[in-house]
Image 1 (cartoon, rainbow, N blue to C red):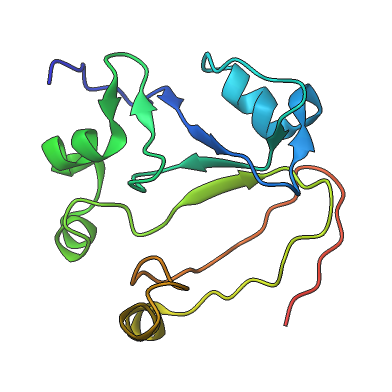
Image 2 (cartoon, rainbow, N blue to C red):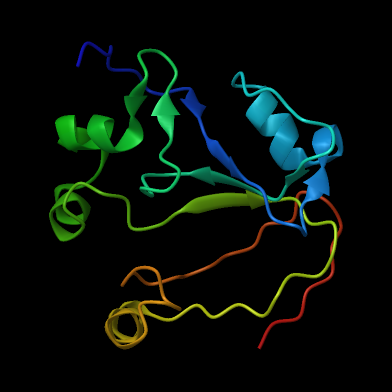
Amino acid sequence: MTITMNAVYRLQCKTQSYDWGKLGDISKVATYAKASGTSIDPSKPYAELWMGTHPNAPSVVLEDNTTLEQLIKEHVELSTQAVYDQYNGDLPFLFKILSIRKALSIQAHPDKTLGARLFKEFPENYKDPNHKPEMAVALTPFEALCG
């Protein structure tokens, strides 16, 4: 890899299109994706922007088209050694921006132990063994139920 070590890397993050997402340029997800060169379809719902190393939508460093996972694995100093060792050079979270047009389905977010067990027992419902911690930071007004 020939990437220059920087303090900040500009990423192209992948979008997820779900029925509940806001349409086209109205979506904050589309706005942020457009800033890194993604073309926006005005009739498409842009529900989530994923920043991370998830294999279904890996982020890419714009400078040289390297995946974020490659960057982290080749530059351990971008993380702590403990986090690097525990997660094998992967990220222990998936950062998401959501742009919500209508109510989402009920979500389940197990801890790491329960996530591994559920994945083993019900792989058709739990797509990976990882924990699913969440934190919400509102960029615009919204209502949520939690419990």
